[in-house]
Image (cartoon, rainbow, N blue to C red; front, side, top):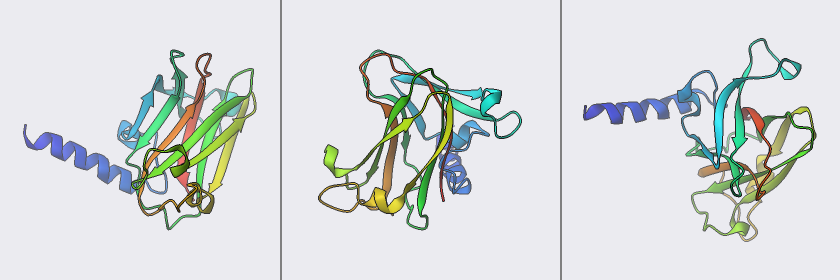
Length: 178
């Protein structure tokens, strides 16, 4: 009983390392163990057929709770060293009748909790669209105003809506490095 929590936790870290360059993998709950919903619910769901790229493709359906700001998901403790890669790619679906604006926040371990000391980026997703958004790691590294973000020591990635209410659901199909 004492060893089980340590072994279980170790297996999640091992899974995280093996799934690279994917930051999350949707083929098992261990593949997105470090992804947590904030003011929302994240449910593994079939992708509507009009947006499928493969038969029986699944994604995380992020459903905001609409009771406050910052509804979305946080990837805690992603693989920290992104320096061998050039891009972060997010594969998203906006199933809604209106455009969707998401915010992407990336912190390194040196982040001082100030807005200007991290990477912040608005993502605009047209209505009824599946889109792959590719962001240069060079752009991410130059996100903080007074210093360079350390791509060898990434701590957190947050994908969220910054609305007080009427937040919209969206699908997170993939999050990977290229």
